[in-house]
Amino acid sequence: MMEPAIVNNDSKSTIMARMCCWPQDMSKSLIANVVTLLGMTKKLAKDDPRRVIYSLKVGLALTLVSLFYYFQPLYNTFDDSATWAIITVVVVFEYTVGATLVKGLNRAMGTFLAVALAAGTNHLASLFGNIGEAILIGLFVFIFATTSTFIRFFPKIKRRYDYVFLIFILTFSFISVLGFREETHIIEIAHKRMSTVAIGIVVTVLINILIYPIWAGQELHNSIALNMEKIGQCLQGFGAVYMRTDGEAKSKDTSKSYFQGYQSVLHSKSSEETLANFARWEPPHGQFRYRHPWNKYVKLGFLSRQCAYRIDALKAYCNLDIKLTQKFQEEIKEACIKMSLESGNALKELSVCVREMKYPSSLVNAHICSSKAELETLKTLLKSISLYNNTKSNQQSEVLIQTIPMVTVVYLLTDIVDYTEKMAATTYELATIACLGKSKVMNAAEVSPKKSANNFDETNNQPTNQLILITIAEQSDMTANSLYN
Image 1 (spheres, rainbow, N blue to C red):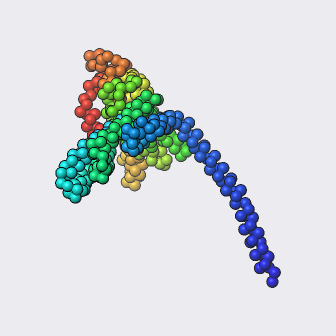
Image 2 (image 1 turned 135 degrees about the horizontal axis):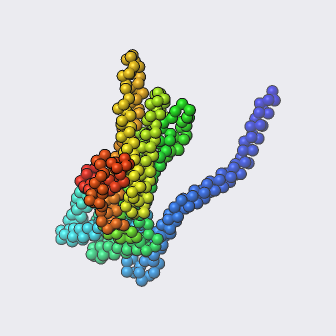
Image 3 (image 1 turned 90 degrees about the vertical axis):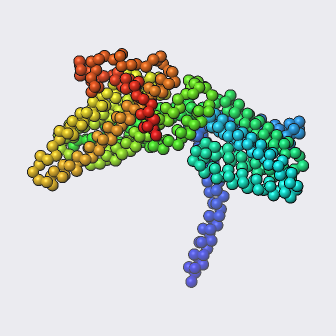
């Protein structure tokens, strides 16, 4: 009869113990969260110190435009309109200089158009009396807001001028309605609005350019070079993990380690196109001159993604259990490894050329020629295989099925070699247009006539190192543009 009371007392004691431990647990949890937050903050700042500098620049810009409120003479000039300078800094100050310039120009354009139309419509509406003025202003606000919102759905408009129309709708509606109620003349309201917005834009642009600028062109330049290097590393590792013999073990972890870099290349299109658009608005800086060929970087990014797509398809074959004869694997393994290794070496060399802004060296040409030579060897091996040397049809089908993955790999590697050669051509075009290094382009007359059409020197049976330069020099922009489009 005493057991229920004992159980009740035990439960009460447990609840009391938990309540007593609750403040201690909460304090430990709070401390752990603070330590985690500090660790994340330190990691973010350490990974890219420019984030700290950018944050300091935004704080400095806001402090400067806030002086319109702190000093009475400035406040008497602009009164409450000074808030638009603060708002302008917040919405215009972007991470890169190019993004800030584009955002500032779009805001200035939208504000100017809205102020001009608002002043005109308010003056026109004031001619129809108090009631007629309210009706006409409301009608104009409806028409312009509806039309501008619909125009924003056009793809080209949305991509380039969406922010312009957004600011136009906001400014036009604000000034039209405010001009109806305020006793101050609409021209004075428009003047203050344009002045404060212009001040915010100028302060933002000057601080972003003069204090440790972060250029969109430099970001694009480094991103393209890094992506090419990642593709090269993946190709270098592919040959080591794809083919195996009976005495070799193929680890999935090893295969995964070689294919960690290409995923970021697959999703780089949006960022590269955005950076290229911002870079076109930036003034000349460093090694980037006026009218720098940013479209060539976009084309290099496109070609890099095409290689990444092929590598993504090749990844499926790394862990595929292909059971072929020992003789067949030995014959094709060496050519497959050399082909991917040479393509990877060529891409890594091209990434260095892009990063250092120089012409592709003869070493790049040698790697490309070697990979194409191994490609011809692979094709010859595949053609020489007899799929019908067995007497039974089921054995013939089995051999055919086991050969298909190998043919697929050769086809994908063939595409990668072709795109690698096109990337070399685009890199050469980039260096030529940017007027870097050499003063003239090599022509066909500078090459020995003993070079044959199959990329080999007939005197010593070695791949030629100059043929790619000729191909690059003579390749038309039409072919490159059609590839990109």
